[in-house]
Length: 244
Length: 164
Image 1 (cartoon, each protein chain N blue to C red):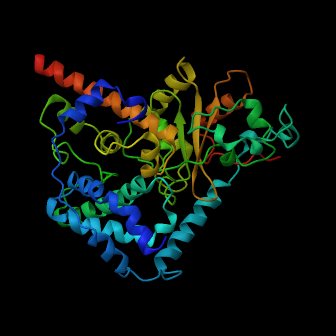
Image 2 (image 1 turned 60 degrees about the vertical axis):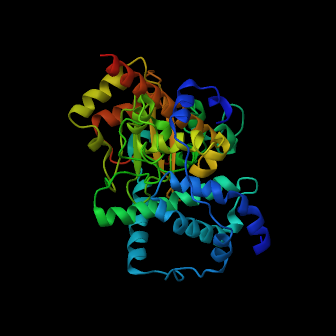
Image 3 (image 1 turned 180 degrees about the vertical axis):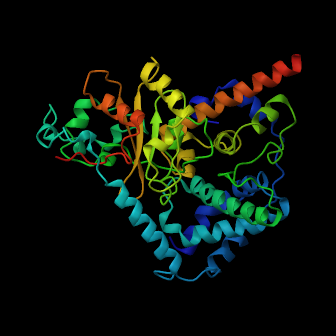
């Protein structure tokens, strides 16, 4: 065991609890014969019916991602031109975007110079697990979340309240019906723990890009607009591009 | 990487792979699956990150074990469909001793067991685990931290149940 978990008592107990593994001794001939073996599959046939179906589905999803709805229409190109520091968000060092934990200020978002929001967020890495509803958000940044399934994911940055989207073109409102809305309201409208609204948006490459809209209760703020739109169930897909 | 280099590089990892597999599959399958892992490694050798040969092999091994379990589950139809990570070992697989910590480990999700197993049983560093999981060190560290917390909580519950 290495790194910061080296002296961890619980993990040490786990390590001690393991009986010695009696693994069979493998011979070097395994490697030798592996190098001589022929691949068990042939080259992939291009544009098979199944692949065409997937491509069509993927294209449909991506088309859906770019549907723009009105709530951000007040935010125009002029207001998005440059950041106060004069650098565009696109130029921000990628390394600073630590797995889903980078929080952008509203000013940074608004200075994104018409960069698609999915580029503002961080490309997710690894495999998303929609079945584990209690997982924290960082663990959901994994993978492209089964690219063909779903356009976006919506998170509230509190205690794992989120709704994975497993269907194409699912409306945001569908996430927040009945009991979900009550929970959502209590979390993002009144919870002092709320850090913002976290969105995971699918980009043109099929990868998911998380972003956080931090809490800003000022009238007309990006946060209140997105929150209101979610609560009022009045847009169908998250806008991914600021447009004039 | 030519054949000589390949053998020289991976020869020392044969037993690590054997142990990895022994913790996850039936003994009778270890050799076959090891062959499969090295076949894939040979075909994809150009993508092996230098200095991370073993974690890279574990990554391949994870897929091979997952596929193996999928095949078994098709036959037995007993593995839950949503078990996303079929390569994670159970307490039984890793031959834990039946203690409270073993039970606590078994109650974890497959994902938690996977990441903890790579740290505790495979003895990988966080950086190496990140290579296996195809994610970043930061994400791996977070996953480990949470998995460790859940293990500690399960253990606490186990111990309090025992006392009651």
